[in-house]
Image: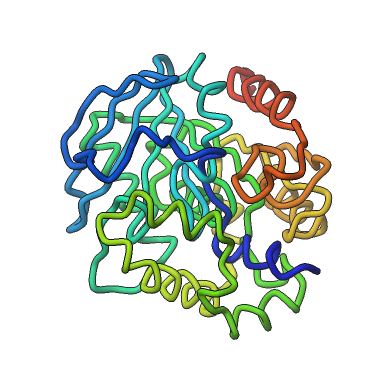
Length: 298
């Protein structure tokens, strides 16, 4: 298995397919604003459990929360699909603790804390219930939201999501023990440096992400079974997440569906490190997701 692909899951591969060159260092990201580029969106910061969390809101309609992967930003994970999704939904996306434009706290990263941070952000934005679309580490965070805050959850999309250590090949964990900033995909490093208030904190973000994965423990079966939200589980057929793991999750989450899409980790949504493949799976994956979100579950 190629190291860049392995690292991509650790760092839970990232957002925008292209970095908006109009958002240069001279932009004050701390002021809520309306920006017009190819899309009109609201952006701002919210005080969330002791950190200043950056968020963006696109479109109108039912709220759909996007949760990026490790080492990523809103744009490196979801940049290519936000224009599609915002045609039908109010898309809310954020940079998580220590990632992108969001500040850090003096504590390790955890999926549980990220889940609590997102719940608080939505409360601050007066959003009482939403659907959630999490990719890679963001998918694991989405599971924790469904477990810890079920009252705010409508439906969930778990894209390339890890819930058990055996969900990836053994080589992944060996690689994680030796993870270095030099091995991080160039696209993710450049994306962080372009938007972070202090680009020198890249090493801190990398090390915290790596430590979280090294210490990752299984989500117990009983907690996974407690997820009542309708779920769509998606992986690539050449993903870091194994098909067997996705099938196991599908069987544990009673109200779930499973889709296996051609391609590697994140290729089906045009994650930034996969762009050179030239694939265009997002054009049929996003309609599949939209159909799942509008489907009435009995």
